Amino acid sequence: MADLEPTKQRRGLVAIDGAMALIVILLIVQIWLLSATLEAFLAGHSGPVIPAAIFSGLLFSASLTLNIFVNRIDSSSRRP
Amino acid sequence: MSLLRSPSKERLWKDEFSVFTSDERYVTRRQFTKFLTLASLGMFVGNLWIVLKSYLAKKPAYPTAEIANLGEIPVRGVKLFSYPTPQDNCIMVRTGEDEYVAYSQKCTHLSCAVYYSAKNDRLECPCHQGFFSIKDGSVLQGPPPRPLPQIVLEREGGKLVATGVKVSGNG
Image (cartoon, rainbow over all chains, first blue to last red; front, side):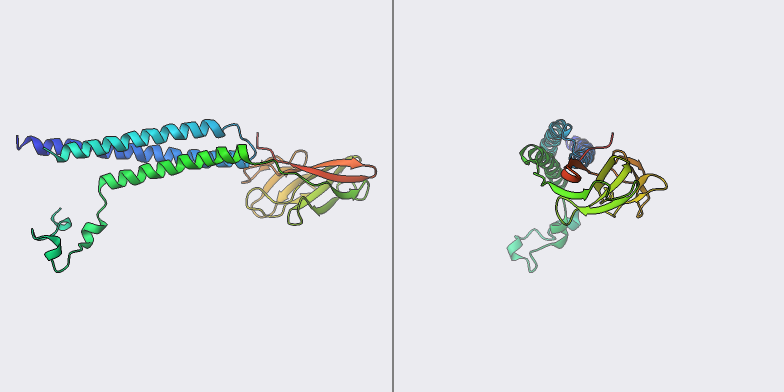
């Protein structure tokens, strides 16, 4: 049982690192989306504004879900 | 990991130095993920702000301003004026016997003043070689991301008056 704990912890760390990398990617997409929307808005196009906000909301939901996932994995891999 | 822990098992208040700098500076994965998620929320709020701005912002009311008399400038001649405020410099070009066009003089790249090149029949920005079409203000070449805002001109008797500003995207 004592040998299994480090493996579980390592797997938890890998999962957390993967989730973090995914959040970073989502954040980069969101930054690009915000700058592109702002550019379109300043150019007088208000068409892409709502779809961009919806998509940004979806990306934020995904980030939040991953954050909850990280917290859950972190808690479970710390406790025996 | 031992560097990030208190060196003794004693209670913190018993230690001579109860603050451990390395502990304080240590950012856990959880904290970093929380920071990333908050940044993501910030981006979402930014997008929502643009939505609110585009739907709640009132359309600006432009004044009517007399710009020039008809025939005051020669064909391919230029007149500079300010519209709608004294800080907004504009350029009017007489492109034909009976044709006039006017644009904001501020380049959409980095706000340098554009000028009319009669030789090439286009508006040119001297700073970064941005060229705009004289017909509709669209970008012909260079770094400007958007066309020049066009000043709406109307005729009232023998005079040319500006009645508004038309902002359009590229393409």
